[in-house]
Image 1 (cartoon, rainbow, N blue to C red):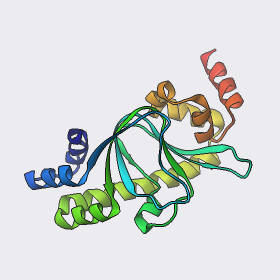
Image 2 (spheres, rainbow, N blue to C red; image 1 turned 90 degrees about the horizontal axis):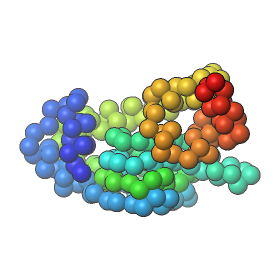
Image 3 (spheres, rainbow, N blue to C red; image 1 turned 180 degrees about the vertical axis):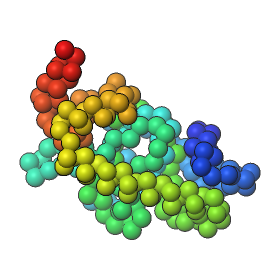
Image 4 (cartoon, rainbow, N blue to C red; image 1 turned 60 degrees about the horizontal axis):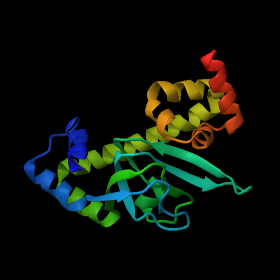
Length: 191
């Protein structure tokens, strides 16, 4: 399972054999079934996850008790409630496996040890968190400026696998619309 993570890192940073050994030492492989909540809201996130296979989402409940999906991650990539993981504070959201998932996970303490022992992982870790910040900023801008149709089209263009593996109610919530609106948009696009 570590091969996908090492391959992703090697696309931007040169890893030594020692770096690869550290990766296998600190990143724990785990398998979770479909619909398993692996980090709960109101608790400090225990792990940063690398998605090897499967689909994972972050969600919270709004004031009406409805689920609001704020992030959907497909492989390969990292996911957690980043701010809360970094600061070790209680997260306002849940992390759930939408499908059966193969993940690599690392604790905050082990991430710190890894980045102290490996300059390559330190550089990569900084890059991951910068990408997370940029993603969240871009997502906020898109929710405010793009139409529902444009948001759906962009998702189709950039992440088509999500459309085949994630329930429509999660996709609708992630795109900031209700499931009926998403169904209407999909029908209009097929015409």
